[in-house]
Amino acid sequence: MPITRKWAYFDHAAVAPITQPAADAIATWLAQISEEGDTVWLDWVRHVANARTSAASLIGAKSDDISLLPNTTAGINLVAEGLDWHSGDNVVTLEDEFPSNLYPWMQLKHQGVETRLVPTNQGRVDPTAIAEYCDERTRVVSISWVCYSNGCRRALRPIADVAHERGAIFFVDAIQGLGVFPLDVTEDGIDALAADGHKWLLGPEGAGIAYVNQKCLEHLKPIGVGWKSVVQEGNFNLIELDLKQTAARYEGGTLNKAGFIGLGASLDLFLSLGIENIAAAILDITDQACEKLTAAGAVVCSPREGENRSGIVSFELPNHDSETFKKFCYTHSVALNCRAGRLRLSAHAYNTEEDLDRLLTAIELFKSR
Image 1 (cartoon, rainbow, N blue to C red):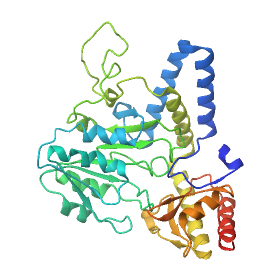
Image 2: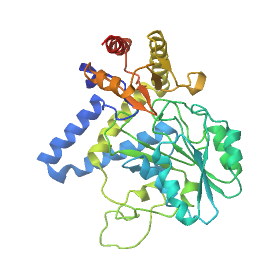
Image 3: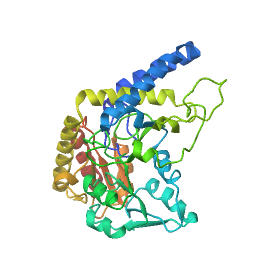
Image 4: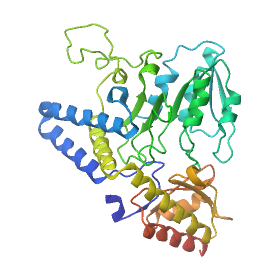
């Protein structure tokens, strides 16, 4: 991770630095596009196809169920804009969701669709509480796997069961956990999922994935249709609207080749390391962070018990402004962020105890000013 030469970087829940393999892959593409033009285009296509395969492996899916999209929002809108909604239908989600998992559903109000927000307790939510908000008109249950503001990680299968008991689609915004915690779309009962690659997957912005299983795909109308959406992709002399029966139908136009080549390189690195190993390292470093922060007088506000833990730690420095401390940290080459009025540390598997010590030193200096 080249970032480590300067920064103690704890802001992966916002925009992460990319890996060296990703940087090298993008640099190779840049040299090729500037020196060779499209004469090596088929090589790029193969690299992008590899990114699709690696993304599928990451979540236990088939490659045909993966769509390569620019961001999480685009994946959410595959369902929000693709379902045949009727006045009186509803969507059930959580009150602490990131706006990307709220606005696409709220936008359906003009079609008579209600968005129901389930209260949470510091990110925790009981599946029975979700069930109480569902009824026979619930079409989608959509939740974030990990709460963006405080890092609470939710067990997915119990919520999937609630959705499926109502005949609803279970959608997961996986951006704050994908790649760093094990996930299997079949075992977890996920019908559709989206995540951008620029956070925990350590890829560039503008390159993300969506998963749509075959059953769900059959109930969604195609959106964003273009020349790449059809079976005869590349045959511009045959004009027939013969759509692909895979999630690739949503890739209507030219993809961000550089972005997906870079993302694919990072995905391959993750798969070689093992997601279980990455998860263990992240939980270890964030457990250490909580201990050190508490000892330094900070108040940890994230759920840190059992499976609720994630790579995100929300905390406060009593009697000190969070935004001011964040800016102070930047002057000492320590990167973190603020959400919901609190400081947010988001550590990855490559972070070290030395990185934490640099943060603790910044806290001591800030308090002594």
